[in-house]
Length: 176
Image (tube, rainbow, N blue to C red; front, side, top):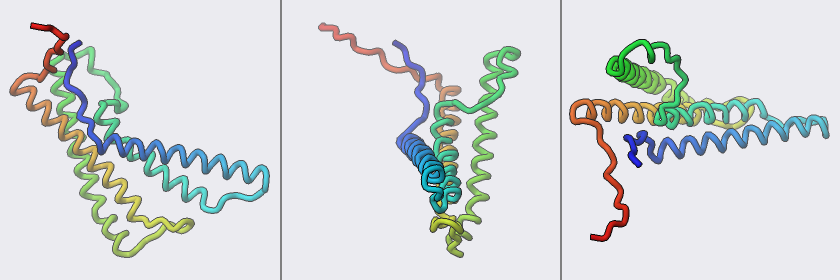
């Protein structure tokens, strides 16, 4: 079975996705417990909204790098059937360059708020979660996504100039 080049997933995007999935599970269980306590004991859990919005940051951003590595972003494929294969590949490459530039801009502009939150010790009002930890989580996920896109851009350039790499044929147990 021939295999095309595998997506540039590594350990970091997989770990981030796992943390995001665990955050989603915790967020759901916390919400269920809050609703259950409200219904049964007429008492809510303190800080539910703050905890859910904190975990939502992890859910939303930590899967970004893995999603980009698998090329599973949402997009509208208007031109796929209207342009040639080489033109489409060029447009996808330009899209990756634009994505990399945008992620770089986000990483760069988030550095100042992150430093300010660290310096001033900002904390969420309802739960003792430092704001800088949330911004650092976002920064980490953006850097991981930018690295994934950069690897894809470099692989595209390599394949353009040296030809695509294919997997070595498997040894079928021949005895010679």
